[in-house]
Amino acid sequence: MIIYKYARDVGAHLKKIRLSNTLAGFVPTMGALHKGHISLLEQSKAICDITICSIFINPTQFNNPEDLKKYPVTLEQDIYLLESQGCDILFLPGVEDIYPEGLETDKQFDLGYLENTLEGKYRPGHFQGVYRVVKRLLEIVDPTHLFLGQKDYQQCMVINRLLELENFPTELFICPTLREESGLAMSSRNMRLKDDEKKHAAEIYNSLNSVKQKLQPGPVAHLKQEAEEYLRGKGFDPDYVEIADAGNLKTVIEWDGKSGLVILAAAFLGEVRLIDNLLVKK
Ligand code: AMP
Image (cartoon, rainbow, N blue to C red; front, side):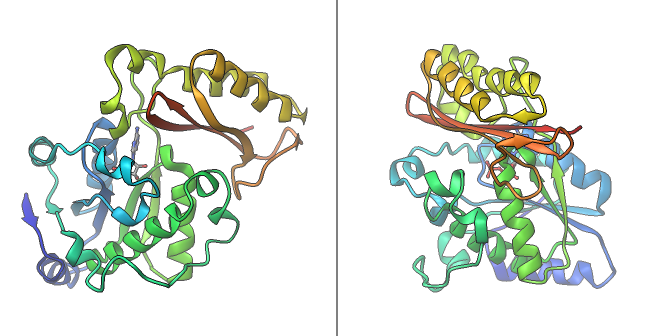
């Protein structure tokens, strides 16, 4: 595995490779890697000739400075894991390289409805930061394929929009959420949970499953209230449980029993904010 710290170096290497029509898969991450991240790497390796991972904790997507400060960093372990799993190139940029003109920028991207709903509502500015960093990374890496996790469902929709708005030819692959045996979605933030909290955190998944099982054509709003109550009863502080159209993330009040749905939740367990979602395909 080759590690690059500078955009110009990784860019020059990849430009050379792309001249021979190599399929280049890209897995952007913020590090503190787990099996979920590795599943994206494996997907890329299965489809592409070369796989590039990046580790960059993007300050512009953190609306809460405390969350940024506490974000887990396990760089040595990450490098070892990527190397042992056959990653070809690791891009490890510094803030100055990703944001050469500074972090502040007036440019706002047109995220439409996605900007202020769900994660956008509870983490103002978050998706502007995600858009900004992924745009910059795609300009540097110029991959043919991009691998993202369904775990961050709304993020996948934002990046899909980015690819359209910026006319990137990159093909987007959304990979399934990897879970612990308990059902808890793997996440770097889980490292901040104590052992007993980790088991308990799977209640988020249970609440989503319970909504999924109870779904019937007709009114569905009561199900999300029930799920929020359930989570409160289990000691969580939920931001939301939502039942939305899987294609556009708009709230579904009455379900026709046919359209694809996604059930999403975000809740605090102590200081740690967890998100998860389940797709309902009929
Ligand atoms: P992060 O490092 O949290 O920014 O995540 C980097 C990528 O890994 C994103 O595309 C995430 O959606 C994806 N990812 C995070 N957790 C999981 C998981 N449990 N299963 C599959 N992909 C995941």
